[in-house]
Image (cartoon, rainbow, N blue to C red; front, side):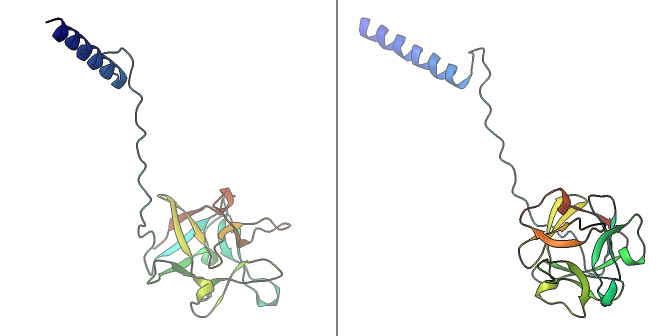
Length: 181
């Protein structure tokens, strides 16, 4: 009988320790397990034929700017949306997008003087005019160029060209979408 009492006592102690470890009846809340975050799922952010404006971190809209020599860089330059700040979206088969400007030309990364500015320069879509979209929130995107770099506002003197220049998404690589059509 004494053996059975000792076994009962050991089982009761083990049960109490087990419950205490789980937080039950111990007066101490159990350590919560971290909630796994869902992996981002690709969503159709844009649709073909949609007209959008993109606003940079400085509050200015991306716009095609006519520069000397017939170059049409995209810069964060306009306080309001005008004809030069409207971009037509083409969603490509691989999920990337191409954007065309008011001049009918597609935005493209152009290697120029050691930099990679985005210009409205291509008559057709090529590898340099395809951008991968990363949705950051319901109204903000980051765009990645063919070189693996994210488009970013880069301050150069008194202008703010958009260049495929950042290895990671930062404050200057976030663009707010305004859907116009």
